[in-house]
Amino acid sequence: MPSPDRSFLRRDAVHTARLAAPLVAGHLSHGLVGVVDTVVAGHHGTTTLAAVSVGAALFWLPMLIPMGTLMALPPMVSQHDGAGRHADIGPLLRQSLWLALLLGGLMFGLLSLLPHLLGPMGIAPDIVPGATAFLHAIRWGIPGFTLYLALRYLSDGLHWSVPTMVAGFGGLLLLAPAGYVLTNGLFGLPELGAAGVGLASALMFWLQALGLALYLARARRFAHLHLFAHWEPPHPATLATLLRTGLPIGVTVAMEGGLFAATALLIGRLGDVPAAAHQIALNVASLCFMVPFGLAEATTVRVGHALGRADGAGVRRAAMAGYALALLTQSLSAGVLLLGHDAIAGLYSQDPLVIALAGRLLLLAALFQFPDGIQVVSAGALRGLQDTRVPMLLAALAYWGIGMPVGAGLGLGLGWGAAGMWLGLTAGLGMAALLLGLRFLQRSRQQPTMTNAG
Figure 1: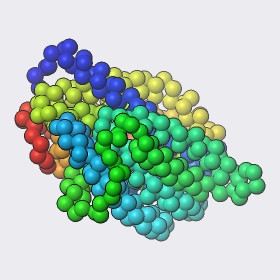
Figure 2: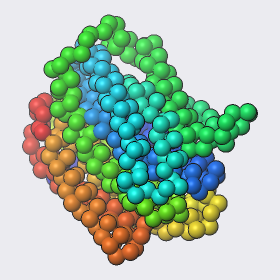
Figure 3: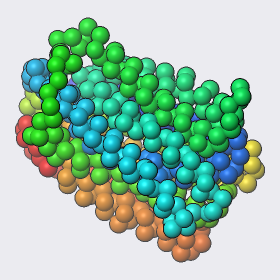
């Protein structure tokens, strides 16, 4: 790709950083949800921590589908904004809320059935009751979570990401005390264990959705869009457009998350200590991932806005700014993991065996910080171009054609255990970074249009 003028690139990097900062903060707060859940469960007991590890894997794996599907909203909103079609934004949001309710209902039904698969999956018998209780509790918050996603993606697509940050940290103010009280049975309440973690999370999801809806309805910034002025019934053509663009994103995100979730389930067959150590390492790695994920969402919005203006050079500059910022932030996270792996693991558990194994896994997590940053920013730039179907296929090859076979072969076939599975994660993310990066280079050479590139 020809290098743009450095002053333009510097300006684009500043704009991306300003847009991404609240997104990163919001995602970090979202990642801290997992930290709070893991710390509360870990201090309740190793079995509780292992149960939350397995339950969280089964919860987030299917939830990645609606999360990714609704990610079609920011680039579409941003393109409308860039092209000056503000009257189309309100109806688009209202249709996305219908889609969010549909997806939330489907996920509630699925989460009601998944606990029956724990036994056939070979999950250790002492983990199954806690994991089941966690899933049965957290499923009640799913519709609230999908509605919240639609609302925050609308705000993000309009270059106003502060509400994401506020809602995220506001939720943490509820989750931490509520989770601790419900899990340990304080103030005369029954001790719910893993179910208490799930119930506190469900309550947080609903309060975040209601709070953000109230803000969007009353904020002057959005008054001219008439977001809730009236309601239309579901519009099949609009829903089909959202699904056509968003479902491949959902599948792509689910394939990456599914690689981590499947790894958790396979490690869950090895017993309490490996499952608990994996949960700690995965939680820390997920927290690190929130930074490039926020940068990727900002890149999506800025690429989409440039696409709405038919500005091909702007598309390329927005992507290059995202790459530069991701390399910088991933250098910092890799350094933290290399220097502080044992100390970080010690914050989660009091079990010396769990701490030792988690520390080794965090060293492996440092290896995939750079490819993880490159692949997620590439995916974000491609979403801004509404190029979603080919990236879905490339992600399938990387994660499940490379990552999972390598991880299963090393971890289970050669007996390397959890460490072998994490080397498979590194291989899958590295291949995704290569393939998605090349795909964006190819697409960026073409003059962007307002049509779906598929």
